[in-house]
Image 1: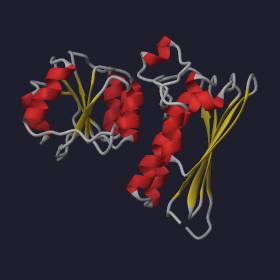
Image 2 (image 1 turned 45 degrees about the vertical axis):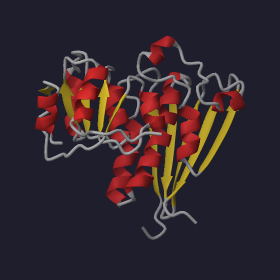
Image 3 (image 1 turned 90 degrees about the horizontal axis):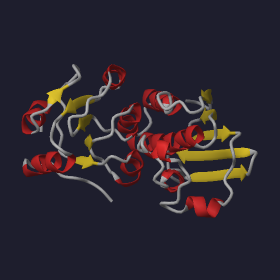
Image 4 (image 1 turned 135 degrees about the horizontal axis):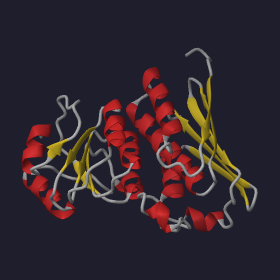
Amino acid sequence: MNNTVIVRDYIIPADDFALAGEASSSVRKILTQLGVAPDIIKRTSIAMYEAEINAVIHGHGGKAHVEIDENKIFIRISDEGPGIADLELAMQEGYSTAPDSVREMGFGAGMGLSNMKKHSDILNIDTEVNRGTIVDITVFFNKP
Amino acid sequence: MKITEIAETLNAEILTSNNGDIDVQTACSADLMSDVMAFSKENTMLLTGLVNPQVIRTAEMMDIRVVVFVRGKKPLDNMIEMAEEKGIVLLATQYPLFEASGRLYQKGIRGRGV
């Protein structure tokens, strides 16, 4: 790829479950076309999809910004939703504030944040109540 | 196990037309997509009673090639189109989740989980 950086920006629509995952699906296609290893694609897909779903469920939609260079993929999912009051608690498996309507869609099990952490190499969450949340996910193509 | 053999085992209807030569050895069963993403590993097939577009999305992200809807549930046309676009095969069976899983297990399909 010779230092080329691929940059993509996506809008994540609010409360639209039919479209939730479009951005992740598009990024997945790009990584496949670039010939990135399947396990890296899967880890990236899971981490980004969880973040995207969260933005739909909790954040009233938001934005996804993606940068891919020869070493890594960086994904920033940002929303202007309610923010996370207790991040440490939210990181715990099984803790969820998702409403029943979300559970009926098959989500809201309280696994999202821990799953993002598990599948990314660097996960950084910047959140403030009533201001919003920014989730930064980095996955390296070759482990140092 | 080929798609046709899965369909026979579950007395299932094949809903997609792009059924290629997928050979399924592993599967997971769940109604909660969060758990599929958190606990499932390297499974080729998903059995679920949940019917919405996020099932197809989850399958896509998890490299799941075959989705079986249980308890007589049927996806809408837009879900079938979405699956065909992504090369995912959809089947529908009347069997409940436990029984569908058991029938496949008996035929040698195994789960790869936690």
